[in-house]
Length: 430
Image 1 (tube, rainbow, N blue to C red):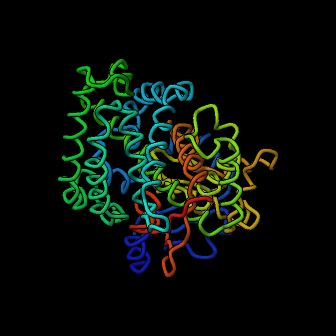
Image 2 (image 1 turned 90 degrees about the vertical axis):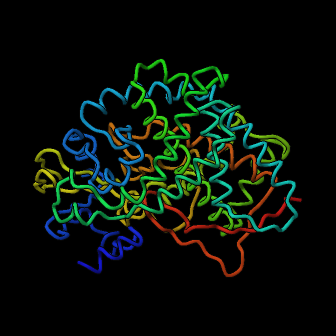
Image 3 (image 1 turned 30 degrees about the horizontal axis):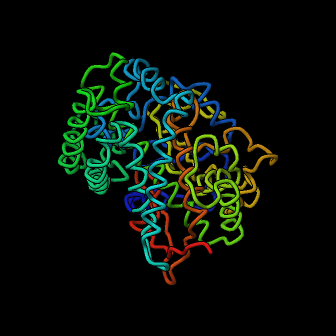
């Protein structure tokens, strides 16, 4: 068990062995804490949807990792706070608002195409950093307005990177049964980065609400009746969810296309056919880009942005014939479920055709990149549209090729990243 915990501190994916990708349920004990991992779709539905109230609380590790930054933000809150805030945030990010939000994505995609066009052919770019900056621009402008977003994006991104580097993958004290009110060292290490992010966001909110932004989600959230602290916490939560996860999904998408010439050619041809190789994708284009969408969805199947959904049972329950006691850590891992031999044919293969129109729909709860049940991501449509628009706009003009001797290796912390950098060679389409 010490070896397992040591591996988990380095990379959460390292804890899974070959049996993990075949067993419907795993029931293990780490130190005094019991951990149940659900891979079977029926068991996942039973716990995280049908019995959601018993499994709504995030794991101690997740709470201690993110509370210094998010406070009582929607991502980690539960109980009455979550019930009150969820509808307020959901109204702001509802799919019905997408048509009004997508123009920001289109504008940023056009700017990125222009920036890449200024680079010499064959330049090596860090796709992870590029997509991180892209997603930061989109979410900052969307949250705070186009005139305020650009100046703060780099500051918030660098501070969040520092924050994530300082928090751990495991919470040994919680595994030992130490109460939540005892401070964790990880929170103290990350406090400076958290304060920096909170300070920048406080300033952006004040500027947006004073008329510095012509249009923003912050202005819409201001009408929800949240108190000032909750308002700030939800703005940071939306930034974190809207930046980090989309950036990683896009980085993995470029990596997979760099390794698969046939799929890369299909996406490029579709983009040139729909967009003419000269303009950025818009809201109305998305339904005409099935290959771009399929590639993004298959990338999120193989490399789900949030690879682990861990909850702490609030009440006794029975799932898949197992008695779950209060306090038990119950895990649904999109990384495992998406690569599980019982759920998918050739689960480790990159096959975007699985998600093309006319293909069989994946069985329920076998594809869960945005979580599931009452806690499903409120911004899932926003993130998917953003990724499709970015990919289609750039893939019609450029392709990214592997750099000899460099490979992407998945590392799971809060999110699933291709290491600390993803160097790929930029080539123009002829």
